[in-house]
Length: 421
Image (tube, rainbow, N blue to C red; front, side, top):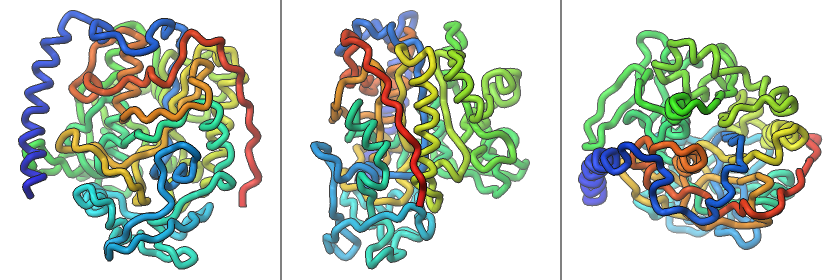
């Protein structure tokens, strides 16, 4: 209770800080702050691609990666330390990863109650599913990207909870206080959801209520549009399984205007745009459930889809001017041993994998810098001279430590999709 009280007090300071930050940055770009490392040459990046997959922790995917801060054992609710077992390509079930579930698992930073999550205690060859991980042989292409480019082992989800609020952080550095997924089963989580749909909202002081899952806060897409910088969100359409991850569906002034028709396009269009040199300056890319890696979907099928998207970039004319940020939206109920920092009332959430792929990414580099989804927003703002949206992106580390903009552009790494189990 003392921790939660401190978080509430911190959250009040957080929103006071937003007002102060707005005054500090009024009339000037984010680049007026002290210059970050390696900023010289950042303008060589003409295309930023933010690929978001589903429901994995760092330890689940890269816990055995040499030189990274990974774990191969974990503490359960009984205090027993057990070896992490092997995650099958298709899991027997999903694991709870709601706002409440995340707080149970994290347990005030003890990281010891993942087996208490619904579905987390399902035994896989004698090990609770939540306490399993994949090996290099299971996701060899993801490991190849990490070995050749940049792997970040201190990347956290922005909110200690599930997909819907975290996808809002991915475009806006906030979720409007939403902490869970909307309560309808229609596959519509935004401004076109049925009228009786609601989402749990918790104010920074801890007051809880429900709201229709359609918000009107500013996103970085608004900042890009105002600056004349092109952007698109590539996502499944209405009626498709991945439509729930089309984050701009929950932003009223985008979903209910012409911007929805002009800037939110099918995810299947991405490969064509990449190969033909028609990528916008900033892209978000999500896909359907079978290729998302959201349990119980196939990890192999999801990796194959990702490889196809990245191959299209590397084989197209825009590779030499592109930065790709490949991450996962939340922890999905899987174990991770690193306690998430108490940045504010809402997060951070447990670690998720992040791979940075670019001709200007450092070679075989492991970044230990603390990142979250707002760090990608900060990178976008630095590149295009945009003001921060709020305290999250204004205070986030900007990811420039993972780049060397003065190096000769790296060659593409064309990979081959695998035959799945």
